[in-house]
Image (cartoon, rainbow, N blue to C red):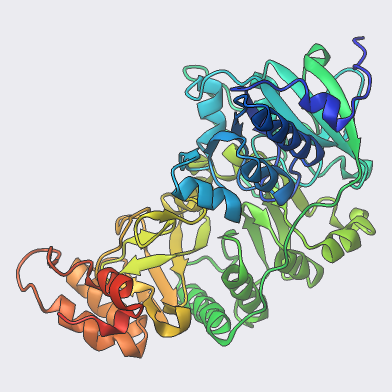
Length: 495
């Protein structure tokens, strides 16, 4: 049996990293993200830069991470390129300034891009673990993400053993990796609660260069409390699903739910949990938030699987104090399984994601403010939307005190086209696009979803062009955006 190397300090581990190395870090949201080694790498970058030497690394993760990873590396100007998703303010500024190359990706594709070699050689995997055995069995912490693929493909491995997370997490992970074509087989998962893999990730222990110990909580921020608008959005989604159930378009046993991240998603799940006509349901999703644990505790959700436990410190500690109560009710999977189109279509997932912007014909922008400034990335929304049984997008109808309409004549950037988006929900109502032509969709959106202060403007736009299957005006399609840039208020638009 191969012995694992001696323990290292974070600084000793960082000293092993070289300029231009490509690193696969654990983390899917701040949950399970490496912390102490990336912070030490950032410190090394500052020293190298002060000495006049180049030092930047390629950073690949499962999704976003926390301030000790993306934040520290971005502040140290140590990121050469970044993929597939991020949510750090400093990193976002660097991306939008053109200093850091960022390529946005569907999260389900990231692991296979790494395996196929599309992103080049992976020099290092730096992964947080709750435990590691002498023969190379690694117990991950609060996320799986793309860590199994990083550990498999990296030339060298560094492990952060984080004592904050208990070894009793054994049994909460289901690690299953796909083979590359032409050897890929169907994924043997036919029920949300099926186990198809291993509890730990197995690696060749000779690749493990060193272990760094830490005791650091996940850097998960609390989401904002429900507002009147987000609560109404939640109520509208719950009522829509209840009506679909009554109409027989959703089976009486209901279907698994996928929900995005944030205060709107929390409001939607809360409203679903409180709705008397929605039965106890399962979740097949990505991020497991506080609201999901509340639904589990209230017996409104019977089983949930995702990629990460993105929980506030209080809720995570309460869960750790009673882990046995969640055994057999909660499972963490790799993102290429949770987000796999084959599984999403097979299970009949109802997807609920948040739009940054939507247009009157049903196209959705999830990523770019005013079409040019990257916010966070597409994440897994496309993975689910394109294969969902019903694909729903939600958003408040306005932003910036009403100065911005989230519903515009034409999206300034399109991540999800009208062919994938089936339902749009705001605090004002629901637009169901199924079986509707573009003109019918526009009327539904304007009448049901648009804020009253923008309805006349959008009707005026719609009537500019009488001909065409999808009536659009090249001259006026982006008038809302141009007016906002000039005056700071889209309501000043004139056609």
